[in-house]
Length: 82
Image (cartoon, rainbow, N blue to C red):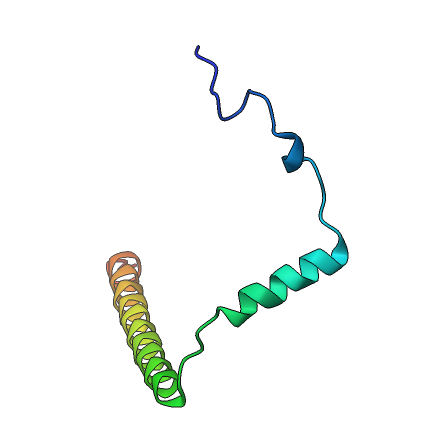
């Protein structure tokens, strides 16, 4: 077997250092300033698209469940004449 360089190898000394809490907080705030938030119109559009998709998937799964349920009952309960 060959040794993977991703698993074995020397680590950088700076990778072992931990950042302090204030530095971490400043980095988080700096990253959050880069976030582009959607407008209200985009938010409403995304919400409607997601709701339509979820309702469609619920209807599809419900229809398949009903169909397979009826099929199973027709196979196992319909043929017994005692």
